[in-house]
Every structure is written in C-alpha cells, then in structure tokens.
Image 1 (tube, rainbow, N blue to C red):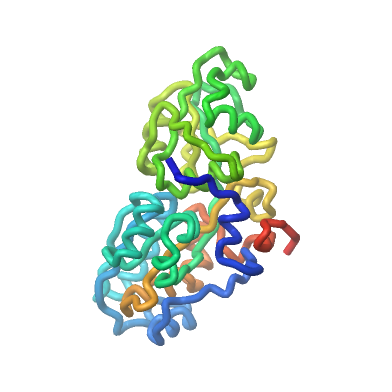
Image 2: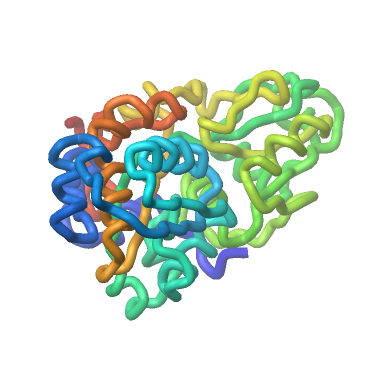
Length: 312
C-alpha cells in the first residue's frame, strides 16, 4: 500500500509554483541533436543518432511508448529501444538508479522518490489520460458517485444492491502499491485520506486488470481509457459523467493523470532524441490520440499549485 495518499493538488502542484496543464514549457534532457529532432518534427532529423534506450514504469501508457519507439527506430535504425511496464514506482526507482534510461510514470517523481534523487531527473510530460472504474459485464450498475466509489474501495460497501445493483457480493480488483494508476484513482476518490484496503486481489499491470475483469463476475476495478475494452467489461460513469476524453479536457470527468517520462540530466544522446521525438508533431499531432490519449496542449483547464481550476 502507498505510505501516503496523494491529492490532485499534490499531483499537479508538486512541480512548485504556478503550473499550467496547457503550455507547460516542457523541458528536454538537453543536447543539440535532440532539439533539432523536435524542431523539425521528425525522428529522421536525427539520422546520426545511435545507441540503446531502455525504459520501465507505468503500464498505462506503455503501448503509446512502444508505438512511438517503432516509428523512431524505423527512422533511426542504429537506435534500439526496449522496456517494460512494471509500474510507476519501479520505473522511477530504476531511472534514478541508472538501470534504465527512461522512467515512465503516471505521477510526479516527488511522490515516489527522495528529493536528492528527483533533483537529478528531468520530467517530460507527454500526454494526458483519463482513468475510470470498470465493472463486469453482468453488473447492472452504470454510474457511481465518488462517495460510492470510496465506500467500495475502502470495504465499507460490499454488495451491489447497496448501490442499485443486484444482490451480489462485490469483487474488488485493485492494483498493487507502486502503481501510478492506483495512486491517481485513490487521489481522486479519497483525496488526502489514507487507504489500506487491498480488495480481493492486487494486480500488477493494466493488462492483468483487463484479463481478470474479463473472466470475473460481479467485479469492479479501474483502468486508464486506453485499456477500456467493452468486449470484456463495461466502463461506467462517475457522478453522471461519461468516461470520455472530451470530458477530461474540460475537467468535468475528475479522474485523470499526466503521463511523465523521466530521464537523467546527463542522459545519452539516443535517450534525449527519443524523448524529444515524443514531444514532436509526429507523436503529439496524431499518435497520442490514436493510442487513446490526449495531447497535453488539448487540455482546456489550468491549475495553480493549490489545485484551483480555471478556464483556459
């Protein structure tokens, strides 16, 4: 379980000062070759780049990273990119330790690492993703309030009939501690309140949740939008709001996160070039949305360090 529950204010304010989800002034890891690649909007601009890029971290946007990596390697055959999706906590720990060159995370590094580790890393915010509750196909409930979600994921509500469904025991499928998806979901549902409820199972990855939800009756869990699969389970409303990207961009759907890719300040040129490619038009202009994510520039809200929302 997480040592501490983090609020949306902490997630979005940890960078310090006044921060905007729009036009964040994203900072690269440095290096002229990488900058040229971003300026020209194409990985082909970095034809001389070679080396090995490795990553670990959030499984929620691993598919986006993999799709971008394929495009980058097609244009840069001397670069090898490979990695895993073992959770935000593991990714951040690995990049801080230097065992991978990129750490992918649904949350700010400050929520997982010590200050002296964070100061040596550079954050690239590459996309925004909505996350929401999903239920088994046999569950008749299609809308839950945040208060009802709190009851279910704290173990206080244990039967679907308590929230308008059939008389059946609720099977709670949770994510393991260290998951950025879990941290984001709990922050939206519980705020600063500490939670130690594990549920009936704690799963490692988003793909594991997909599989388990598809074979379990009366279950509830949560996933990022890119892992929704209506052939296996149903994504449901929260507070009457549908879990759609359009509702995330205006902040009417309250459960969402920024996807981060961290590298060391002294990262190698191949890593720098790939991260700049993630911010280029090649990725932000099309690939992000194709993979079920939202370009950071599309967000219609800004938040200050206190978490206050105002219109763009």
